[in-house]
Image 1 (cartoon, rainbow, N blue to C red):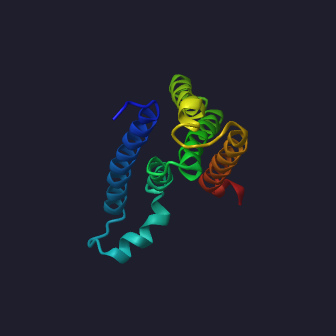
Image 2: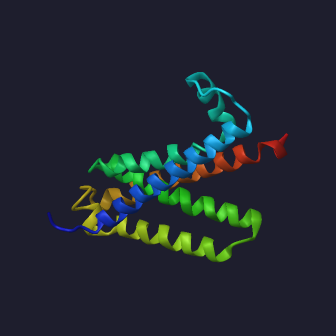
Image 3: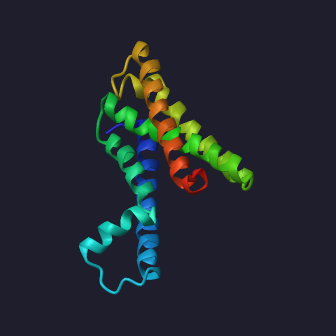
Length: 163
């Protein structure tokens, strides 16, 4: 098996998924303890998911993880939408808080680097079989998906202030 540049992207997505899974489940269990649920049955857990908001990152990175296993346009869109989402969401978060500029610069640089790797001919054409003419349109689709989800997350997070 020959090393391919796209494996770096796949590895980082798997690491992000494991990290988000661990962190989300840990915070969700703390949320359930905080709400003083005495028994953890399936009904209690399912009814608590929308109010806790800790499992949302797991769902979002799950699509990128699914994209790792598809070697076509759908897999490429699933992976690149997530990087667009990270970049746009971090810009929104920084503009709202004006703190941790170094973290946001590093996170955006990494996400942008991964987007550049995904757009290289070696990855887009040879691995995902996307020709140059279709790449701009597919990039636009993944950007719109990432942008829309970022805006929806921002609205959901700040809906208290909108009323």
